[in-house]
Amino acid sequence: MPHTNGLTNELPNPYLKNLDNDVLYHLGFSKKDDLKKLFGDVKFVCTGGSADRMREFAYFIYSKLKGKLPVEDEIKDLGGVGHRYALYKVGPVISVSHGMGFGSIGILLHEMIKLVRYAECDDPIFIRVGTCGGIGIPPGTVVVTEGALNGVLKGVHEFIILGKRVERPATFDQALAQKIQECALPADNFKIVLGKTIGTDDFYEGQGRTDGAICDHKIEEKMEFLQKVFKLGVRNFEMEAPVFGALTHHAGIKGAIICASLVNRLNGDQITATREEMHDWGLRAQEITWRFIEKTLKDM
Ligand code: R2B
Ligand code: URA
Image (spheres, rainbow, N blue to C red):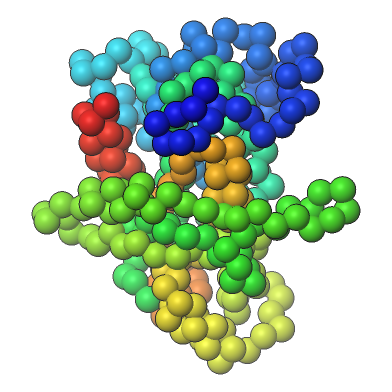
């Protein structure tokens, strides 16, 4: 069925139609569950690395929506049966953890994309609400991804399928990213910037750090690279953006990434912020996500 955004509800996999059932193994659901009843009203799938943070996000959304929209009485971890991801539903919002890195978020996205399609959700938007390492921006800045690059600065994610390298474009909806950035308010004590995001499959050497257990490159080479990518419009490093952009785009789902930066990599590699600072910065990304959700619900 074509949608207003020109995308279709069809999953890009002809074999799924032949399955009697489809087990979403890591989420602990299957197509035989009444997914439409359980999740049919979902409009936003918000995902972040840690289970605790996504639980906190679910309670935050609950505090905002209660009394305004029908929300569940109890916030239960629905991902419990799968034992891999924590998953909460609060009215039209799913809050689900994705773990760290391409592999973990990739599995989650395959199953969440199938879940929202089987549940016949109407134009769901996927948002990664996470943390990142900033480049040339103060810690605590919120970065909205306008495009993702892989570790060799290509705007694709490389999948290895049947022994072959398969590149798929890591595409982000520009209007959506813009709309999120416009959620900034004059009273905010932090900035929201649009920027390119480099997603790597490692936190240390993969992000050019010189403080991993192993390092064969020089600090000067790292600084040269960081300066170069800053000039290309890159504002942050994280570990999921290319596969997030590639899978959501391929499946015809709009996706966005909103990250709080924990460090300015031009000043160093170590994350030295206190727990409180990091928590407060994380809440900024959650607040922007809520503002976007609120605005979108009002426009519906
Ligand atoms: C941000 O933080 C994690 C690494 O510390 C990773 O999941 C990411 O993208
Ligand atoms: N997450 C990353 O991937 N890199 C950082 O520097 C901080 C958080």
